[in-house]
Length: 91
Image 1 (tube, rainbow, N blue to C red):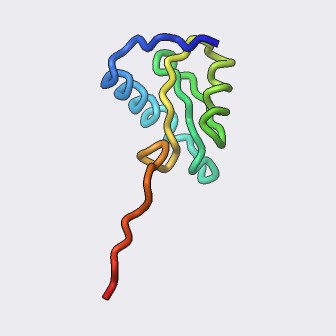
Image 2 (cartoon, rainbow, N blue to C red; image 1 turned 180 degrees about the vertical axis):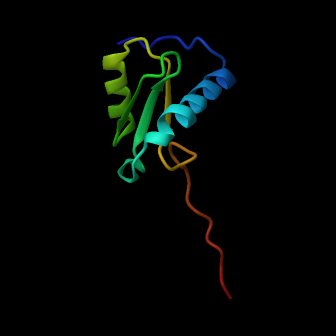
Image 3 (cartoon, rainbow, N blue to C red; image 1 turned 90 degrees about the vertical axis):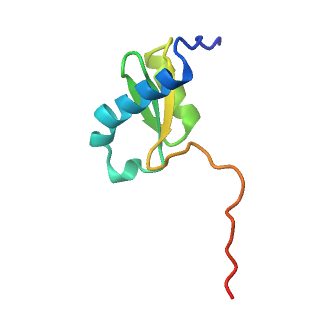
């Protein structure tokens, strides 16, 4: 399957995705949605929630095959975190 070309710059892409998430999705989330992923089509506002990012994207692509997809992890500022945590030594 060929991925659709991105039609927006990075900043506009992020702005649209975050705006839709904050305005339309976050107010409707439940406690059990925490740590799930939301795939959002930034043009139509259509979205899907799933336990993993691939599942969310696959479900969104079934509904909107040419989606411009913005992905959010519910309850986190980041999709993934790389590296370990720095431990502080106690004396």
